[in-house]
Image (cartoon, rainbow, N blue to C red; front, side):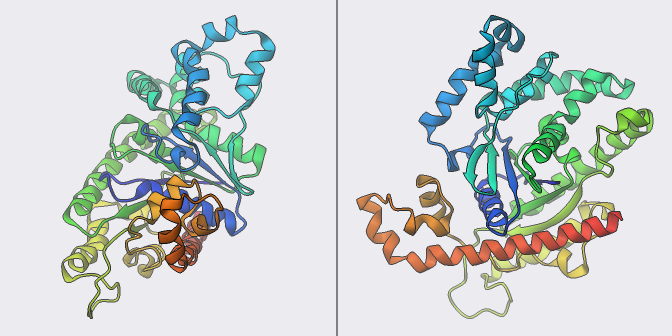
Length: 372
């Protein structure tokens, strides 16, 4: 199993839309994939559930989020087993670790999205888990078992689900924050990708990511040296590696251009600076497995580069990937004419995301080869 985080310090770059459609493309290509929604806003979850459906999940969990052990003790055994074996949010799965209590015997089933695609929904309350990590962070240097469990629990949950359900990939959606939760997520996955807009903000976002990664790696290097071999086994063998960037949802220039990405001159000028910024601010240790072309070129090249306009909104409305919207069979009368008239545009996106997914798979093969 390979775990991948989709991350940018800049919001509004289409990160969640990309995460959902990448995972769906991997599933259609025959790779069993699990999505984990670790952005407190839970927008990834809303690609599959209505707000009302998500509220029902959260409502059942509320007493456990307040006090897991107390609620567990009060619950009838059969009720507790039924609750824990049903679809549960990522915070519910992390709560025993946060509270320092034992894990339930039953493992919650993932939310089924596709034959090869499952999801662990998000939850707004995840900030309390982040607060607990921050409080216990210094204890990890002393090898405190509870602190180690806290820092590595997201990774261990990924591994547990991969083993039980034969997932090849776990893809994690994150918030734009550089706080403690993302520090732990990014530092303990196998790789991460950065969706960018071709603008100044994305360049500064990459700078911030690179500087943070440098500090995080120093801390984890110290931790690895201090821990016993047994405790070191909870962590990945290598610090996270960079899998590449993509320019996402950029406006396509309608006239003639002299650039290979069909962007306006202003956007292309910024886009060209992205690889240079990566080289300058993200340590080469994290991208040496990439070829020169992979470092210089967005994942999938132009496959998903240009704007989808309102297509992602329709995908979220109908809880299906963009390319399946025209054939979903439940279109509202107010949308039917517009969607039917743009059917080819919707369906063409499937090829683009499959191209993106195949390029990512090649980069992961390079990563695995470099580790060997």
